[in-house]
Length: 229
Ligand SMILES: [Zn+2]
Image 1 (tube, rainbow, N blue to C red):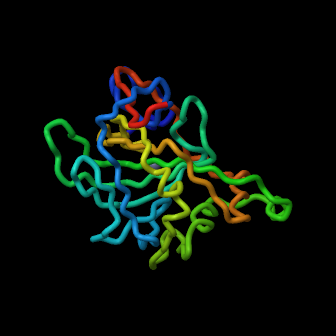
Image 2: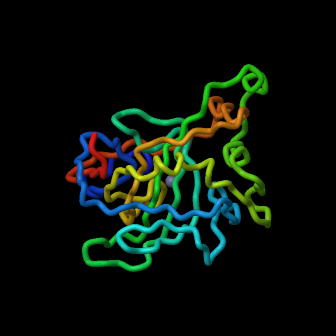
């Protein structure tokens, strides 16, 4: 398959991701999003992903369905923009939608969370740039190298806004943002950003790992939001 990463596919693949979340429509009928993650997620590292050990109790409840968490990973900078503005990085929680219903034919529900870091301290800046997988290591209680056998553990509290700020979201139909770019994703992107509060995590400003696909055309889609301005 050709590398379509930087191509605009809007002409024949009209539901690509990521997009700029702007000119959104307020839709109070959207269902409540319930994020049910344990304090620590256990999984296995494979390339940039933490593959969650299955079966898992980690899930989101949406449209009356329990969608189990399959994996999570990061993009730097954020892939989605909110009103034209990126964030330092974005966490993607990839869930399986267990039952297809007539009006809801996506295979995955991906929860996107835009994340910021506090300003660097002098001591953090003095430590210099960080390597590619530093993001994973910084957020983890325990992290194994890709290709190593073993379990990695990551704290969910550091990957989400405070619980009271997790209810407002944007919603649209889109695609995977890496090959094969299948248009099988129901996207839910939180309105509020998370932030890193560990002092050395601000080194992310020197992060050399850029892994964000360019913004794709909205085409004939609408982006909904469940909150009034
Ligand atoms: Zn992703």
